[in-house]
Length: 140
Ligand code: GDP
Image 1 (cartoon, protein in one colour):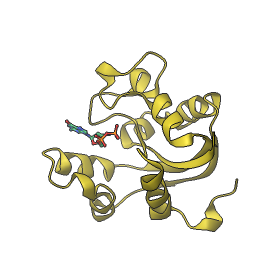
Image 2 (image 1 turned 90 degrees about the vertical axis):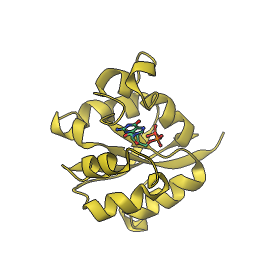
Image 3 (image 1 turned 45 degrees about the horizontal axis):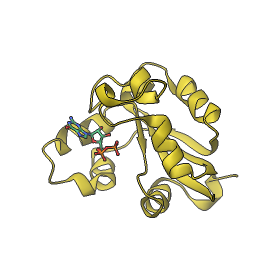
């Protein structure tokens, strides 16, 4: 077991519905600590850069317009195996396939507006945390 940090984003569909606290409570109940957090509004350019890996996908324009449409809460979650633990707490990308008790099962509207982002590997987590946070903004 290793203590890791992962990047989480509470997406516009969730901030629009005032769900930041409810989702944070699920992270904390699941054993993760919120060691960095800020509410920002991404520009379209920032969203395009963040999701560059998906630039050839059919949903890229929809995804980046959605992510820059309203405020998001970017956060650093810390805990044992935080990357995979957070993916378990989030649930499947498509809420129809997400397990009971997961954030996406409870709150996601559809496969695009699915309430949360979480890094998929430790390597990507490091890059994604650095995309939004300076070292001094993370207090463990
Ligand atoms: P994640 O790691 O579970 O977030 O999933 P992916 O890395 O596969 O996709 C990134 C994000 O793109 C998802 O969280 C969705 O917001 C969006 N997305 C993925 N697949 C689709 C799709 O088929 N349609 C739409 N509109 N958005 C999608």
